[in-house]
Image (cartoon, rainbow, N blue to C red; front, top):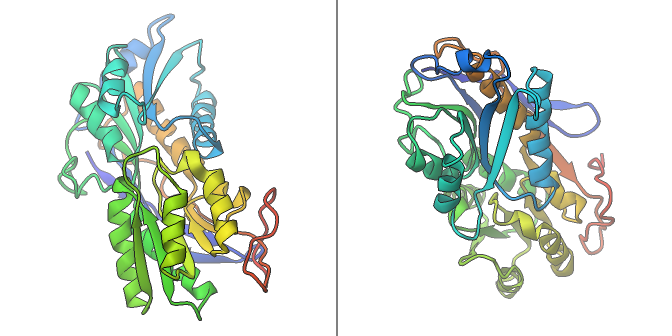
Amino acid sequence: MSFLIGQHIYFRCRGSDRIKRREFITLLGGAAAAWPLAARAQEPNKVVRVGFFGPAFTSPATIVPYQAFVTRLRELGFNEGQNIAIEYRNVDDPRGPFVAAADLIRLHPDLIVAFGPEVALQAVVGASRAVPIVIIAINYDPIERGYATSLARPGGNITGVVSLQLQLAQKQVELLTQGFPDRTRLAILFDALSADQSLAAERAAKLLNMQPQMLKLENPPYDMAAPFGSAAAGGAQMMVVLSSPLFIPHHRQIAELVIQHRLPTMFINRTYVEAGGFMSYGVNFPLMCRGAADYVAKIIKGAKSEDPPDRAGCKIRARRQPQDRECDRPRGTAHVARPRR
């Protein structure tokens, strides 16, 4: 098994200007030996069963990446209802992710895609260690957490795409404070699934001489109004909403609260900005899912682990609303605008 670090990604801002940023995406290589799916995939009328374990389809933030995954598989010759079947289960199932993963394993998938936080991988690894797993890892490092032993030889049956959210959290703080250099009180909204990001964001804020106010949400479904009330009581002048799949169902309410409290706020993706939020800076998740589909296709075709992936890197997207100078309130919710020059 081998890793390949992506080459370059870009932060896009005014018009066609592009600024190189450090890597945020890592692609993992294949397993120590080719998984025996190729022969079965080539059998006449054989349908490969793929289990997809990811967030619920509650907003474009989750629907669009999955559609990108399916579209890429179709481009590679794998069509649902013909030679591939995709069984989807929700990592945020109210019964718990481990129960949902067990349901998925009972369908005997040939391969599993685990999209989201570490618990998505924990659940499917716990259910079966014999099935190849393609991860779209959000908010955790598979090497640091022990799923892979090293960059050179991680070992095991796991491959895929990793978003290194800690660096993103630091950059989100930096960009927001650059936009409002006269403000020093920063609220940071997070939960258990984004706790590592919160530490990185807090460190970045302190290095920039900011006064971070840590607002942790517990016991989902979350009461989103409460932390905004705490932020107001603490005199917060800006906010960073970190990346958690449990925030996604509340994206419209969060955007409304941002406007109500007149807080310039940074988010992980454009869904929040389109709902009325101020600014987003984060990974292009549809492109990550297309990369994961490449891995799925290679495993089905019997690719060897030592073959390096031919896709590397992912674009970082930035989006911002127009700003009312008098009240710092984003104007308009239907369209995303480029930053003013």
